[in-house]
Length: 139
Image (cartoon, rainbow, N blue to C red; front, side, top):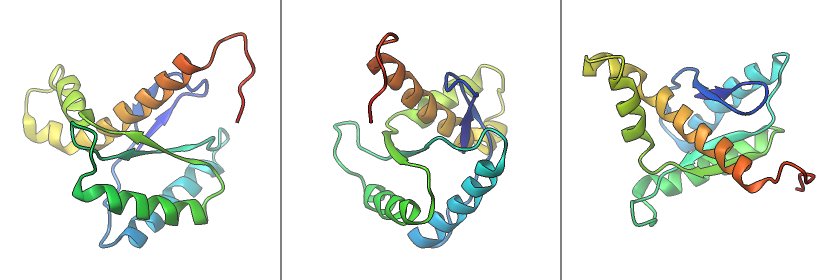
């Protein structure tokens, strides 16, 4: 999991949640974590979920599981759920972690949360690129 700052400009790693044995279990674990975040003062504006794709853009074995989990998640939380391409996010996160941590075992323990931050940052950056600063945002 990752979270953005109040302005929706910068993403940072938050924590790792183990997936669980099924798509339903994964959705339940995420819904619980999201409910905790939503109860905070800042709340939750949207939930961004990484969508696994191959480098050529085709689906992987995990793509269907993520879509099923997202469908279940959308049924139990109020915030909108957005899918974001996660290609190369783990590679980028590992490269960033390697700048400050040489031990791959320590990096591996932080990799999922760091990858979530990369995915969220990509989403935040894409919103900025597609939203002219002088125009109103439309749904």
